View 1 (cartoon, rainbow, N blue to C red):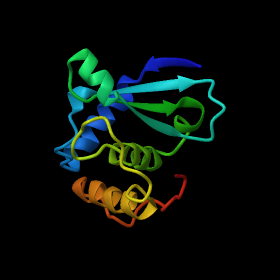
View 2: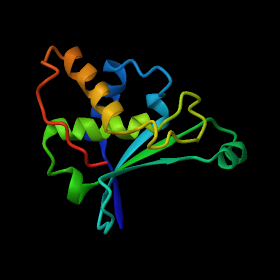
View 3: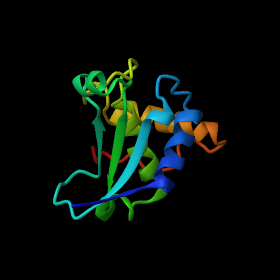
View 4: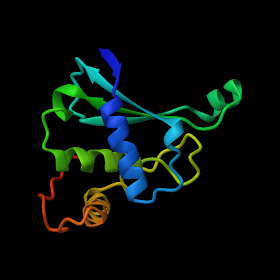
Length: 134
C-alpha cells in the first residue's frame, strides 16, 4: 500500500462540511489520504485517533479519511460527493474518536444529505442517481 496526501479531496471535503453545516466536524482535525494498491472492495474508509492515543498525545480527536484511488478517482463527481458525505457521517457529534455505524450511515441518510448539498448549490435534488455502493 502507498499513501499520499489528497489535498484536492480535502478541499472538497471542507466544502461539503461547510455547505451541510456539519458544525461538529472540525476541518482542522481531518486529513484526507489517497491510497494505492489496496485489494479491498471499499471505496473509502474513515480512521480515527483512539481515545487512548488522544490521551497519550495530549490532543483532541482526529480523523483521517482514506480514499482508494483505484475505485474513487474514476467515479463521477456526484458519486464522489456521496462518498465524502458517507465518510463524514461516520464521525459522531462528539468528535471524540468514535464512529457512527451503518445503522445511521446508510443509503437513505446519505442520499438525504446529498440532496441537501445539491440544493445548497442551487441544483435540483433529483439530479444524479441514487447509488448504493456502501
